Length: 266
Image (cartoon, rainbow, N blue to C red; front, side, top):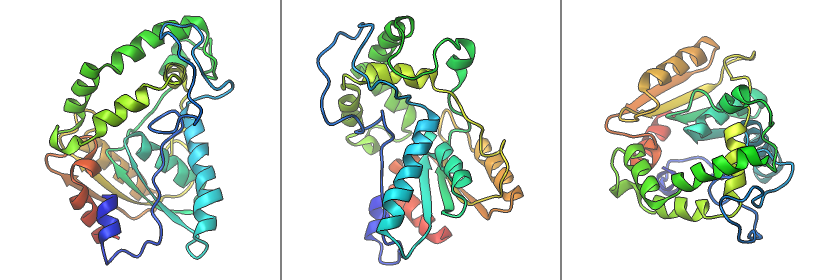
């Protein structure tokens, strides 16, 4: 989708930014951690950091206010696009920065995030370093999830058009998961607390475009329609497109189509 927007002569946007959430993708510290056994009770971590929803909301909010807006002073507002968890965070940012976030674009947005482990086992707050009783079992799970076979199986579920449209995604996942910081981050993510959702809190609506793949095994189009109903009821201008045969990452599988939808809706 990004390539489609950048190559379009009709787009009026002066700047497009992409960013990884801390603890995901390529967002690890630039200094590599020392080698450590995956079952170590104290793998490398950044003390005092919690890889949680609140941390990611704060990260993107700070990026918008410290980098995006100063670099584009004539704009004064942003439109945020988010897939899955990114869509969930986009709505939180719209609530946090109502005068800055002019609209959101949600791709198969996750309706909820986190809070399960912290409610059931509230003996750790998710801030690193993790206690041994958390770190050891979560490290075993992390190693199982990042195996070649597990990543391949995950992509077959996640991408309805796999493997053609997944491109170098597998390699990127394997590289990111190979960081020595991963074991601690994974434990922190599991114990990360949820925060009040956009719909639970007050405030007005926000203009939103929803693009959902109907072949997503996790986030169904009915969930998107509920989001449309809620946002529309708060005064936002809302539209929804359903891409037939699109999976969980519809903007990646159908990048050109989604880019056209975005410009058309705009």
